[in-house]
Image 1: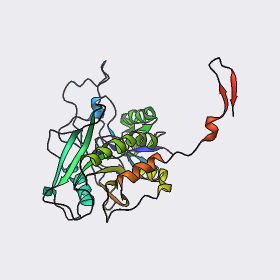
Image 2 (image 1 turned 90 degrees about the vertical axis):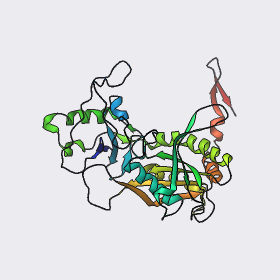
Image 3 (image 1 turned 180 degrees about the vertical axis):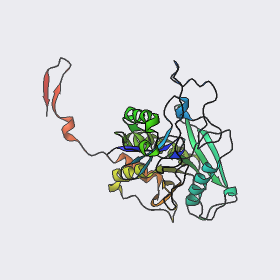
Image 4 (image 1 turned 30 degrees about the vertical axis):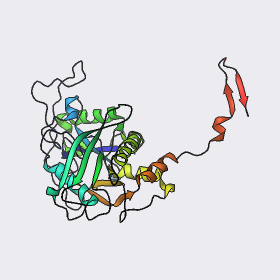
Length: 317
């Protein structure tokens, strides 16, 4: 199944007006980055940061859509940018408040939610790890039973296959005779890559979650993901029967974001909301054990036809 461009530089493509205007991208230099004569356009979803895709000379596609309508975020800044040094903008505040109301309390006020961005975490071998966010609640424990301080990781989606096909489609859209939103949102041969996104995320689950558990009893970790990544993960762990600990002492949460379709599409970015049907609150250790237990005994892999280092066939019983 192919995907189509859902958002181009912060503008949704599934409405026909206003016409989306392509961003002119200068040639790339030897460093692989676009050689902007002036300032590189700013990311629509972070405060004052240059668009990372335009800076690299790539088309500014923020998200794509599968042919069943499901959204797949394919820019790391789209869900909730973690860049620090500038004030949180309205989009970041909205996403973080939605997360907090599913972690601490549905009635919690934004003034009581405190965050750090890109906070350095310590690991034994010296590898550098940063928490996307460290979140806590001011003024005592929340009304929920989970952690009052936790690491919050943002992984709305990931890359796509056949990016060259999608890029050529956008380049064709740039031609004056094709420059309509309808043309831009046509399906291409690109597709989502949930497997790659999950492979990258496994290490985050294990290492950063372990850091939170070791730091202090009662700390935890929450992963904010997109619909496709949540479904992919739940399918892999279907046999684990992870306990639902939302009313109890959970230490790991999966909070899923989806497209908010409650209102009519309006120009601008696609609104996001928490998917109430895709939430998981469970125990960190149980979750990690479920990851480890995915493998099954594979006796045939360890016997049968081998070759020795003289390239001679050897049968091993």
